[in-house]
Figure 1 (cartoon, one colour):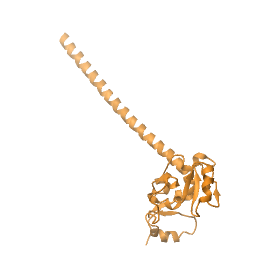
Figure 2 (cartoon, helix red, strand yellow):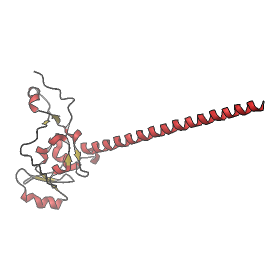
Figure 3 (cartoon, rainbow, N blue to C red):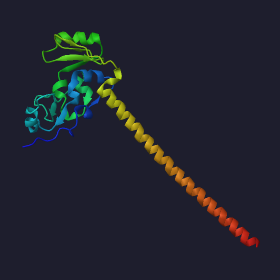
Length: 196
């Protein structure tokens, strides 16, 4: 029995939308999960996964978590993300957000073992750990590149619409000009015939 193909399956980052300014924090937490392959059921790929002898693959299935809190609070990183059919919940649900370093440090002592807190800058604290992951190039992040690409595609679509409108206007003006010249020629021919 063969497994479905993974090559055409979407990646988690494709469907995520992140509140502006929180891209670095979300990328820090999700890390390799951003390139995770989104599937309906992991079990359908069990044979293929077991046969991997080198390399790695990360699959996320679309199952909604049984204990997922339907009332995401605004101070959770999960509240800054939409899309991806709840696939990122397991990773993001226990991550709180802080507006600045002082707030993150103040929240740290009250964190449960499964919780952490992160600021927009990506400085990520757990109850007994901290993680700093800085990109060499601030624009190198997957989510920032995705946002830039989406904005560029929107601008491109608007420009295509504008070009189409201008071409229609040009065609209309050319037809009006042709009609004018045709009428002028007819008037001249009629005037010439009356003179003879």
